[in-house]
Image 1 (cartoon, rainbow, N blue to C red):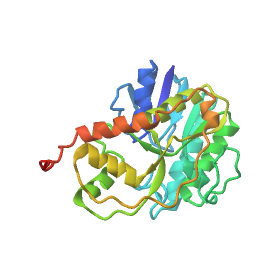
Image 2 (image 1 turned 60 degrees about the vertical axis):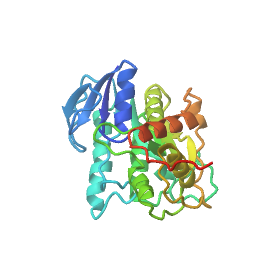
Image 3 (image 1 turned 60 degrees about the horizontal axis):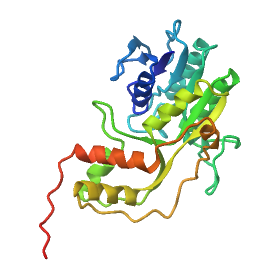
Length: 284
């Protein structure tokens, strides 16, 4: 299958590109730069006509936002944010009409639901962030023409060449000994997101939740300290927790995330790329 992919150089897009190629698909990366994993590159930007004439399917992962921010990613230009991310995406749906299409959405569509809500795809939604609103509106238009959306939670994994790891700023602050507030979030490995997106190309239309682990910042940094020898200052464990995403619909397609082993392997790989701090000799 020849798969067109937008956002192939992004945090999640690089996993999508690598997985598509590993599964034997031909990759057409639509964007400003080619994928670091290979395939064909075709210059394209959100809002422009998409060169899809010889493609068999589309995965849309491109998103324009203030660097480092998704919620609040509109910065001081909400109109421009919507023009690119909503209007540009709606144009892309028209260009892709008739192609199997998957949209990388977000758990932000559930913003505003009360604590303790189990997040299922059939809930009535009214997200309280512009990011979530844009994602939800783009989803609805795609579902109406037979496509599927992947509501992914926070994505982690080894960075592509030239990218910083997801937790780079947090790990640097920990190494400096900065005091860090407690936090807890849901996470999923980028390769698991990619596996899900490829499954959805042949799945019934509609939304699919994509989440794996509940990860407390205290536990993440404790493991990092053990792997690297960096003492740091561990924050308290969080006393508030995010709503859990029910991923039964995605799992019914045969999707199985990497769980704890995937997290452990990622942390080991990140630790191996850093110099290990010297430990004092033990005293008997």
